[in-house]
Length: 414
Image 1: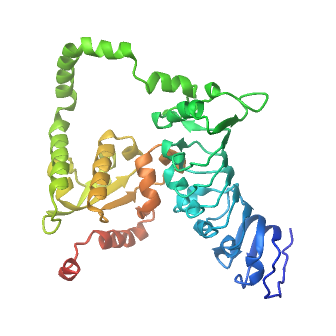
Image 2: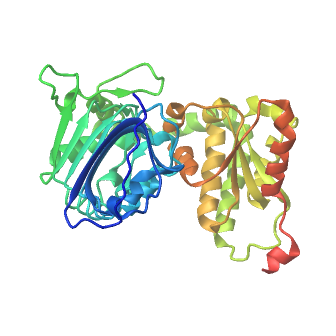
Image 3: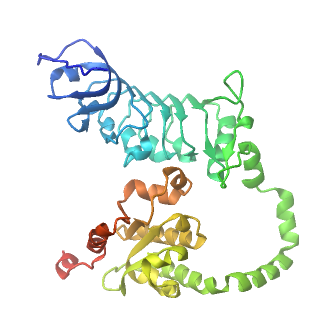
């Protein structure tokens, strides 16, 4: 496809509602503040890159009411957050847009209080939750065709007070009790018509009972309804069984815990106690003994050169920062998961920049999606990557020290 140059010479704003359709591999504009763009109310852009200079061009169509944007999943990352400036939007369609590479995908949909129709067709996204829909009070129809496996949290539908139709096309979810609400909600919510489309049925539509999910092992795909019934509900018979056998189970539990988890009981006690003490303290100055508490998997110990597990009991809440060394080993460690959970509790409590993330290796977005707490942190926090090139190690250490170094007396007083 040959490059095309379009010259817009008029500086007069049209009183008529204009429709504009653009198609090309790269569509780029200059002088983007011209009144012509402000006169467009219906915009269709089919381009891998849709730019004004190096910025996303969409934000300059300030009067647009319907916006249909088709990109490519392989396109380079361009910040789409400025879409939230199109406050007159009533219909937004994104096709083949990779929202996984956006720094804050949820922010794209903020401020769109007039939006009535949202379509995500062949897109990618980490999860659907309330932080995405918090301003979509007028939204009536949602169409979702997401390419990757993801989670749908209950908070996603809470702000959608005007929702009438919700369509899932080829819904791919993780087998998680966090998603179990969808079955009950879809069957019981009379206000919203939930439609399932996909390849499960010859007619293109299928019932909730036919919905499958991906298990933790990444291989098995059980029926989601059966999974939730087996793992996310409490049966009366099971409760009675636990009650009648409580004495025996308690004795067995004490023996097993002592033999298998004895070394971890004391550290767990001290970490929990430290969190409680932290919640009761109001003065946060002058109490730190260490610059950083390091959370890491024992299999990555060579990166540190020293084992610090013995110091965990007293270090987490006596350190100015918590440094999490994220790797595949880290994601599979229950102990590391506990450390991150306590660190995020402390982050919420103190409201300060105390949590630092260092990725020791590249981890695919699909693997991160299953770890909800870490995935949410990546949306709002910067992180460091451990360079594989030895020549870049010194620059890495300089950046890390800049974040860990203690504040000066002037900064404390200020």
